[in-house]
Length: 266
Ligand code: HEC
Ligand code: HEC
Ligand code: HEC
Ligand code: HEC
Ligand code: HEC
Image (cartoon, rainbow, N blue to C red; front, side):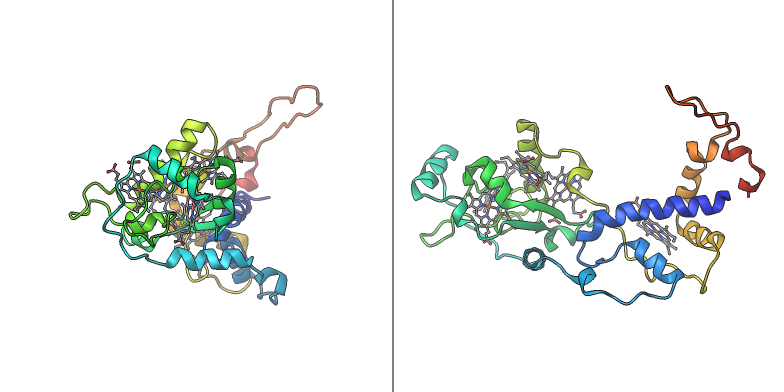
């Protein structure tokens, strides 16, 4: 295999991986790899199986787009008092309307949108934590207000002049989600544990003639991903000169590496 076609193969592998991870993103039902492949070959007819989406996912995506009216007045209550009172109301997992959320607030995205939406298993969290007040820590003032009003009703833009005590929605999520994960030593605290990178739709980015050679595909990717091409040149895949070390207990020896085979050079 030539070096260039090897890069192509590697990139496609990477794309396959990230494509699987970003499958949640509402605008990208297919992976970028699928589109790159579609550009190279005539598109295959869509099967019903590939377009099916779970109903709770559709509803969750719709919910993520909503902007909830801002709640001005909040019931003044100590944390413990609220916890006790919620318990007395008998509020529990049976009152959960949505088992699953996709957190992708338009309020946050208007300021920054470097990442794809965050999946939040609501019912699973509630069942494990057994205390709605751990997260739903305040309620709006008013007799008919919901005890479990969405975070995005009280936390919106950061640094609101009229409500300096309210942290912004992104900070509210980050602080509450990560603090608990850290305290309980469960759940992700690293960025990619919750986030996928927001990979843009590649369908209209890639310009290739029909039936391109692997070299042409690599060339096209490198047009925008020069740094990724440079990084590749520093990997063991590229630099392997051979002979490679033995694998213990196996008779495995490679005498020549990729970097020493003439056909692998540009
Ligand atoms: C426990 C889960 C969790 C972890 C860990 C986490 N975040 Fe977030 N992050 C969220 C949620 C939830 C949002 C709100 C998403 C929305 O509504 O758009 C968010 C929003 C964001 C946003 C703004 C929205 C966007 O798409 O760009 C940025 C930037 C961000 N996070 C960066 C980070 C970075 C950097 C780290 C690692 C230091 C990190 N996050 C770790 C849950 C998490
Ligand atoms: C780990 C944190 C956490 C726990 C525990 C939790 N929730 Fe939630 N809940 C959330 C988040 C986050 C949202 C979505 C908020 C948003 O979109 O702004 C939410 C949303 C809701 C909503 C939808 C509100 C609306 O107006 O649409 C209801 C209802 C709800 N939760 C009920 C409950 C009940 C009842 C419990 C306890 C059995 C509970 N939750 C436990 C974090 C939690
Ligand atoms: C009814 C309004 C309201 C709702 C709903 C609400 N908050 Fe808050 N939140 C507040 C107020 C008010 C403060 C300021 C607290 C203070 O002054 O001590 C606050 C503060 C916070 C803080 C700062 C640390 C702290 O505990 O004081 C975090 C984190 C936070 N909220 C996260 C969330 C998350 C996540 C949700 C949704 C699960 C949520 N909030 C829902 C009103 C609300
Ligand atoms: C009060 C504690 C607590 C809060 C608050 C909390 N989590 Fe978690 N989270 C957990 C625990 C415990 C687990 C481990 C669950 C398991 O592995 O069964 C977890 C697991 C996760 C996972 C791993 C996958 C999964 O669903 O099991 C994700 C993603 C996650 N949380 C996202 C979030 C986000 C986003 C928020 C904020 C909106 C949040 N969590 C708030 C306790 C919390
Ligand atoms: C017209 C410009 C353009 C072309 C051509 C292009 N991309 Fe991209 N690609 C982007 C942009 C912009 C991003 C998002 C920013 C980033 O992560 O660098 C991206 C992101 C990616 C990512 C995610 C990177 C990560 O760190 O998660 C992969 C994988 C990727 N592209 C693969 C490819 C492959 C393979 C090709 C060739 C078939 C290609 N791209 C061609 C512009 C392009």
